[in-house]
Image (cartoon, rainbow over all chains, first blue to last red; front, side, top):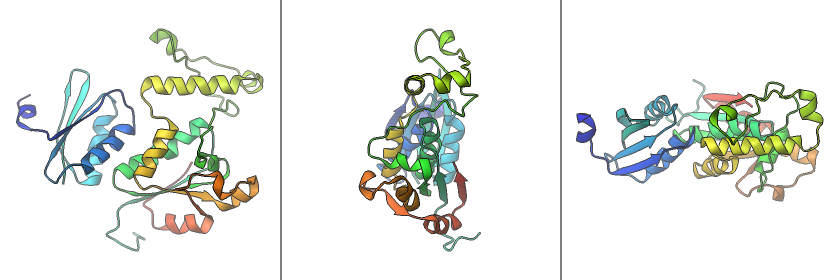
Length: 81
Length: 174
């Protein structure tokens, strides 16, 4: 939990209730609005989102700082490259 | 690596050949996902897939030739919703109005589960600069003209697709 408190997001994107591929489509759009080095906090409930966000991060070069869960939600912190 | 330009982003080349609602999903899901990952994407719409480039999408579910299609109720308690209604294929294919019923059930179930509509996915593809290419030969065969399709669509033939696909990292026929 400590790590969550240390990372400070610049923008939050809530994809609660959305299934594939909308979380990564919306993430891609949200990241375009950020400056290099800024952090996006993504909230998702799609059970496929952890591997998908990891793949998206590898493919786009935007670093996945943290992947965690809060209750039934998946939380990701992505840093714009 | 056959890529002409080694610094080019990854590329996905899809052929979308089926125009029913269920088969409309895979190409638009893969195309928007690849676009979101920064890939170049081109989708070639041919034969029945060509209708997915019309401004008003009318894609329906055809029970014909889908003998394993589970029918799910989009309403009621969860246990009821999870029942697989095994419909005999003869019944599904022959009862008038069944196609409309199956289409409504699938659309409602997808909406309840949080799946985007085909319209939303196509819009996402356009936002992500996915190239949507309509097949000229199919247009001629089925009597379509350029104005029957969304203005963002390109028109091309087999050579157009093959040249694009030759430099692609992933090519799929759907």
